[in-house]
Length: 226
Image 1 (cartoon, rainbow, N blue to C red):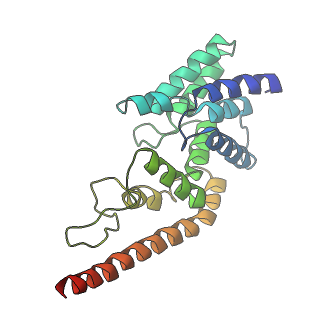
Image 2 (image 1 turned 180 degrees about the vertical axis):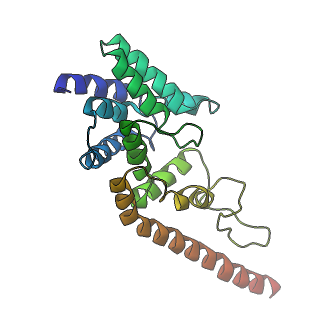
Image 3 (image 1 turned 30 degrees about the vertical axis):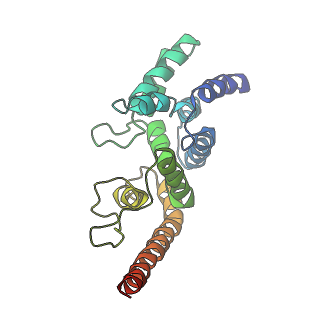
């Protein structure tokens, strides 16, 4: 891939990115993760990988506007149409489409090609560790969801069995469990290095808010009784 082709793909990506949590910097991190992983693999098609990494989230706006849509499915088709219209070989466009349509975790649609597996791992890495925590908090703010839920007894829920969305619920549902299931050894090792910071952040935040509610309600009840 030459610089002109890269800029063509990059400019198309930039025209599609409107989501703060899935912004252009997320795209670049995924691309850089992908290149780092690719160095440890053989027979990587870098044209396919770079195009897939750059375009993997171009369907986000459509999903945000209509949550019934899957951004991976929409994005894969958008990428295919764009590549085909700009003279890319149909086989390359098809491969990029497959990478994008399988990068979102779905048991019934796993990535098959090496490039698709690298994109899947690279995207998943950007939800791990400190960056993953920060991105999740940004997104929860965008959609006006709280940090945590309060149980009927007045204590703070750890998110484990929550039905209502919150940062704690997302951590228990997704972030806590994403450190397995990587396709490449390099990505698994990178994720392992990031795991502890996420665990420590969640535990510390839960301890702080729980203590505040526990001590605060006791003091408030004492004053009200007085």
